[in-house]
Image (cartoon, rainbow, N blue to C red; front, side):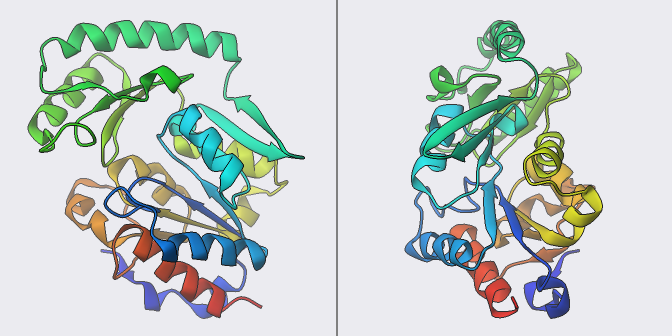
Length: 264
């Protein structure tokens, strides 16, 4: 099981220069961005620590993040596209060519819509129109109370069909084959920030809250779950190494405080 955050060695934290983090229910709390979280993002930036959200959220939402938040870029749609802010412009970098990914997305959407007719409680996410590579199914955002049983049934069905489907805290995200948060994270760190993965394992800390963060927990030895990941831990093969006391964005702020106290 994860250790308490206070057990994360102080000497290890001195090497951290990048924080990769999920967004929904990791930076947010009950759907809002707490003041403490926004302050933490600015304090990390001022300390020279680069923050990169890694989200299943749509490219449209991620474009806003990249423009208005103190972040070094946004990995969006579960790893389908990286948004790079540079000289006041947002550059989009797709895992494959944009044209190929848009074509494949249309095929995925048709498949998902054919199955959704059997799950009337579920629906395409309201932000589907602003997605460029994947398909998102809402089970706990607009759908209230959350439809957990239907989510698990549809998730199993999509996986039986061979689709790359994972659950976040609010959506089922259906990504293209080979697309994963960790695949794009490796690409971004090595190609845009010139890190070897050996360096990344020393300089990057990852923060998440849901089963779709599992590949990132597996990749990065310095991984942290915010407290609201607790109900999911028994379902994960790869756990975060450490756990905050607080939930969501307040847990992220707790991590930022702990990290900044031990920076050189």
